[in-house]
Image (cartoon, rainbow, N blue to C red):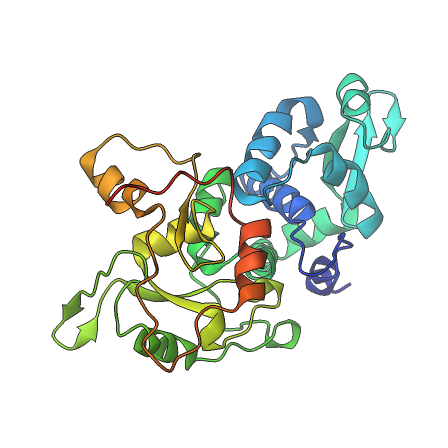
Length: 297
């Protein structure tokens, strides 16, 4: 059985690029637990808080519950649920999962495959990360779930993934004249830019193109905060800063909070700015919370 193909084809609610990372987050959490103890299951009442925290931090802005993937993942053939009274999930209701002692774990055949092929766990994890999250969040997410991965395998599962355009980084950095579009940082070592990255506005994993009008040149800090939903863009190409972000140090105020309401730096004349549909996708699917009011100059 090709477990990678099955994982890549998880049934997920999807419409117009809507993010639904519930099942991938549950699977990643379960992989982390399996790595620590292959024989343990995930009792819903014991992991509900951890799963909810993952959904809040790495899921879309709308409210959701970890009960949904805990029950519905069974239909994908990679997960099973047992209760105190026997086999089978009691449904997707939070109360039902709590009160029946519902415990989930990988399907028996998948558990066997993971024991037989130790490298399979890492390949599944990397596939889930690549398909559902931007690279800037991979290490943070692995740390949050206690998942340890070996360095990336040479095989990149090209048959399951679109190929990225390697020219995008250079095109985007050139478009923004090698400056962070949020803060203006333009550090170099000699002639080589350092700490500058090409950020996808609409994530590549969700159909975002490698075109310049879907990119921003951002420093490493602001790229991470943009992908975490702390920073965003309004319709006037001004910077949004979420009220969820809290920082009392002068550095936090100057580097993040003070950005609220500032216009983007760039792109240079003649280059297409970020397209409206990509900005709207990021605002609806990534940006969290209410924007802070614009900071006085």
